[in-house]
Length: 300
Image (cartoon, rainbow, N blue to C red; front, side):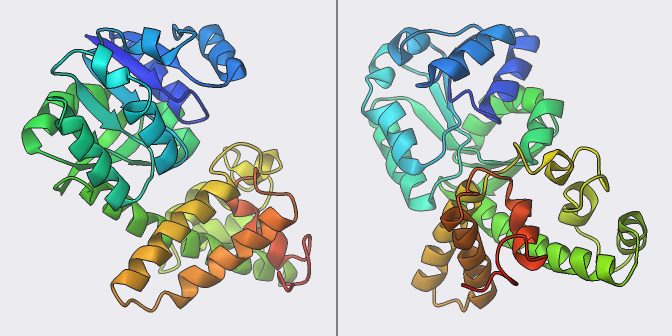
């Protein structure tokens, strides 16, 4: 099965690598020459144009930052015209449900199939092949995609019709952002109370304060070796991307009359980091607004 993979960043490259390891004939593309070079160095074949990568592809996968990028890659590039006429198109990006439905309709109009399949698990999950996929679209198309998704992840959920995967991801990221903010505040307070970070993780991890952010992304350097805080918040899930995701959530909340005050506050704090030139850091850098590294408590 020939797979065209578009988007070879922190998430896309290891995901493409798992498909290569599973024996698929994969060709990757990214607008960034540096990303293409990194993919080639990692053993993922690449093409110098998206058209070459997609020529005759049975599956086209995208992992891109925004809906506008997915739209450009799939609808404005001619990719669909040169892929297999019955190709399965899988978008693993995090975009709005509206964008997913619109793009899916345009893909379907060409006779091809479309799934929105955003992921959770971060760069560690991508590297380890333990991602969670939240899939929107026809169940039959999900079953066709299952071998590919299971090569990259450990859990697979059919969220519902087209766009439902994105809606589920949006809700998940709302909770993740607020869990991270509360973990940052608790981590700084624990330090100033003289409680060791590992003690906090050990106690809260088996108590009511437990969360994925606590166990995997504790924001104090050295507490969790694999956490971005242990590498100066480099890599991971960028502040700019989490701010984008919270923007999607806030837009949806406004449409449906939901009071999303807590989400709006975390979004404001992420904006503060972006204003300070820290948008490329992992979003657990929110702790820098709590401990005073960037302003006192994030006050503007």
